[in-house]
Figure 1 (tube, one colour):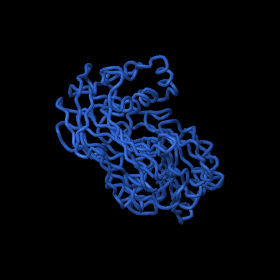
Figure 2 (figure 1 turned 90 degrees about the vertical axis):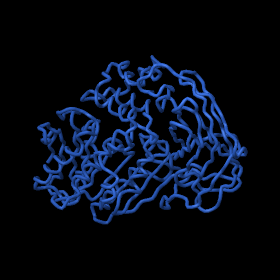
Figure 3 (figure 1 turned 90 degrees about the horizontal axis):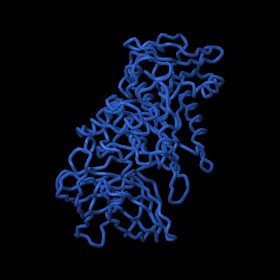
Figure 4 (figure 1 turned 180 degrees about the horizontal axis):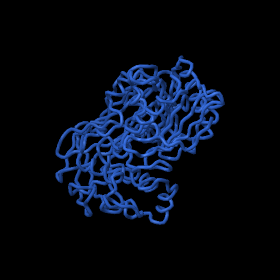
Length: 476
């Protein structure tokens, strides 16, 4: 049986458009659930394949998107709407005991929300597994850097294409930026969205900015809290990419889910996970194998993590290197200084270098500790770690940001890595005052989101780099 466009009622009377694909005998041995803002129809081919395998498949438009009614406010209604779908499934005679929630990006967040809402003895079924690809589990996690700063380019691009509409404007923002290369330079930031024809008071646009402006606790609007993740007795398949802005989230979920075997695939991919196959490893094939193992009640544990330093896949469990190697610049106690002005075309930075004396595997989260000073007050501190090989080829492998309001110590956790460095390589650590347009600029006036003028900042620091190493020391 195939039923397209089934209207499932939400708690407030909104209807959630849902495609339901059952095996011909209407007695599925398992069920896959996807809730997406990007159009449930994109998943029909996937559903047909699973239907042929005896698996039921549900794809649902989230509230306010495509054929679902109600207001589209990202992340706000996903828990209650997940509960509404669970209630509906509980009343269906064909609902099997074994369910997998699946999704990528926003839909990975809704998958975790569905898992949390079914984690109850009151349900006749439960989610036994989650396929979580490049997950975004709340607006903070995808609209703000862990430092609290707004992820400017991402916020404009995503809301410009998907905001304030039941459908999407695919390719609109990249095309617009080709005709207006200064679009992201518009001030104030808070009204920037008006340049693309949308209103600046829409909650989907404004809420992340307000949370950043008020310095709300990062992650405070998560769909599923860290405590809830830790309480889930569930198998997980976590798929991410080293070039994906959500790599920290992929690994956070991998280490946070409390019980049940957790599998991890991290490749040399960005958020779109392309190409899906690298060498002999295809995450699509591994995903199907893993899902079938969950339906058979024998969930596999898969470890495939790509080491870009050697261009090979590791099948060892991903762990943080226990050997914390502390590197300091030659001018150990000296202060380095630079001038930063948000409205200058080019700004100064400081680059520190560290020679690698031994082959080493960096595994985990590098960190930078800075003793900082800026007489003007609030200052941003951007750190970028790169590897330069003997041929002079440079590869950026991790970055991070911190904010200071006064002279203090700032610890910046960089992106997690798995990267082998060789003797003869050089690590470079770049310290700057901005990562624009990725991050909203610090205007020096105390309000980067409503300000229109900039004040030059005199920034100085001393500091060190700490590397998580598997086994031997990097030296330097």
